[in-house]
Length: 380
Image (tube, rainbow, N blue to C red; front, side, top):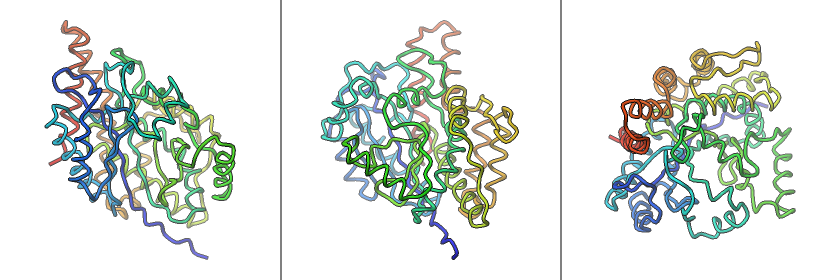
């Protein structure tokens, strides 16, 4: 029996920080009008509150391809930024605010968030972090689980390309994605378990629900998971990217990797599944060093520069990028490696300013300004 080709439609979710344009601090109590106005003006998309009041989340409509996703993100970023500016706020697509302190920040008054705050305590009160999630439609449940098992290998590569959170509470963290460290403090995070079937996955969810550990599958906050709402695989590990082109590249690469793995299965082949400890090591390297790191090629085994690894992935998925119409976006991954991620640009600006004698806080304000500018730079 032939395997039906998935649709590979995509949806992108991005979380943003709202910044006071006078102080460059996080907006502790932004006007509720921002959310309602955005929802009114963007009926085809999703705009929702996030855990902290200084955040919000957007979600594109279901997009047939990256070209549609580009238009959707341009509309979303442009509209939300315009509405926020009327209230004296800026839109910041960065996974951590460079100098904000989570003490005193308020969570959104919503039942779901009230429960999370009660259950998670201090681990969630410091969650002033933002990520990007990419949904890719894999309609067949068994195929969805099989591809999840294999695609986990590529998650560290995507994380390295996305890093945008090198600071924490006004200091260099030493990590290109400090956000991952913060999020990993929550339960049910990190790499997903491996499953022999979709039924096995469902039994896990049912067991946890019956044990009152979770309300539903949406409380499994893995780096990659079968969505509890849609027939998709949802990639959740990456930082949110200030530059729109970088976001689209990560979404395109994720989609292409899934189609490449589908092609292998169609030909009775598969990607080798490595021990989770090995993949976790690459996850750490991506988190720590970003595109400057050397992820381990476990088939050799040896550390390999990101430029070589990205070249290899582009080669492996060339047929898929052509099929999905995202060759330009996939090729852009080489540019990200060449000039660095947002984390690299933030650090370079900060170190340059401090090296010229500026106070660290003043330098970090300039970092905020840089990210604010980049967030809306690709909307036209």
